[in-house]
Length: 93
Image 1 (cartoon, rainbow, N blue to C red):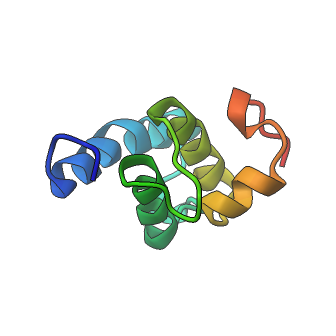
Image 2 (tube, rainbow, N blue to C red; image 1 turned 120 degrees about the vertical axis):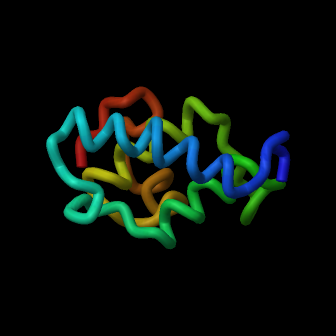
Image 3 (cartoon, rainbow, N blue to C red; image 1 turned 60 degrees about the vertical axis):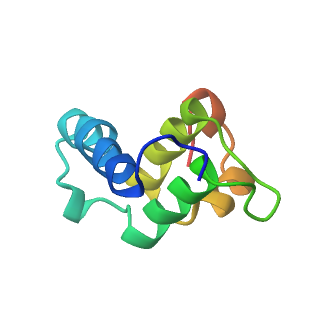
């Protein structure tokens, strides 16, 4: 893992900051969002680990992709290839 903190701390930071911000912004409880635990874990894996299937994300990219997964679901790799506009925050799915 490329992050300098523990896996648990990374997950907690993302949940308490980025996921919580999406909940507040959209008014959608995380349980009612399209984000699954599996896809969230996969997003963190391709953000903090060595390349997964040839893909590694920077944190800013991962935050934009998290928004897509929260709103539309699907896996992060699938969204990267199928969603036009996720990279600049203008997802049109």
